[in-house]
Image (cartoon, rainbow, N blue to C red; front, side, top):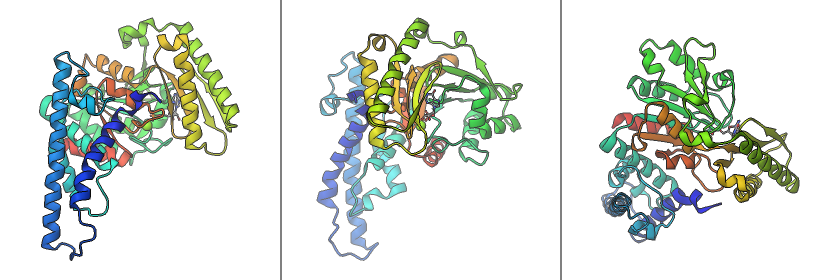
Length: 402
Ligand code: IMP
Ligand code: MG
């Protein structure tokens, strides 16, 4: 996969490597203490101090990186030398405070056998981003991925889902909310099926004003179909014609190019499925083409191989250089969509009157290498990388606490 897909991944691995040094040197796995002894607590305090210093140093490097980008010297920062694939940060990341917060939650520095992990660092980065948003700018728009972020993979948003009251809370605070999902349907009814719990709760709420209800949109197919909340519609959503929300650059996406790109992607998917003997069917849509399993699950390696083959084939085609697209591994299927979530998030920002990148937060689960579709949102907004719907709920409560 291209290095772009590894940005977050490399930054996290690099920070993890920095933390491994004090862990190895200071944690004392072989020392025999009574648990909670004075000595154990003193060692943990010392380790905490050293981890905190590392996060403070990384925070300083990120501030310096931001400054270089503002001073029109992108690529010249020390951080860029250390982590060449690092991208743009839209706010300061308060890593030292975030570490202190997460250490209280996860007792990272009390551990003697397990070093600070990828997940520890990922969650610290999320907290640092929330501090960055609330201390320097404020959050006007929160966009959510669907599968794995607000409901389980392939599931629906049922009325008992604890994320529902949290999303209502955002709307009540006059914030805007977008569900930016790859799931691409042209009919509002299909989204009603997937999001029924939330849409019904919005409809039934006594506290939400009509204006606040209008703060919710659904962007389907990454950046292809926009629906706004509409109490009068039986599906509680109304399709918004493209002409009303399209970004200027999208106007140049010619229909013939879209068809041609999807044709290339489709034949590549078919060839790959035949080569790997995958038990899949091909699904061709208006703005997407994908393969999904007929009976048994497809292995991760086969899914990733398929993503890389199709991504590479389309990238090398002439139309692939004109038209943005997104090939990704959906967990048990592979899809190629026209556009990607950076366009989807930007379209939501524009729809709500031009909300800035540094006042937008995208929450998603797909930021890892080999075909991850939330990663592209990183170009359009700040992001939080969660691993389950439960983590999304925790993140929203953390935001509220700030
Ligand atoms: P997300 O996690 O909300 O972005 O949803 C991704 C999932 O939506 C994919 O894994 C597919 O199972 C499903 N899906 C349904 N229709 C489409 C489509 O048109 N493009 C991409 N994914 C789709
Ligand atoms: Mg997802």
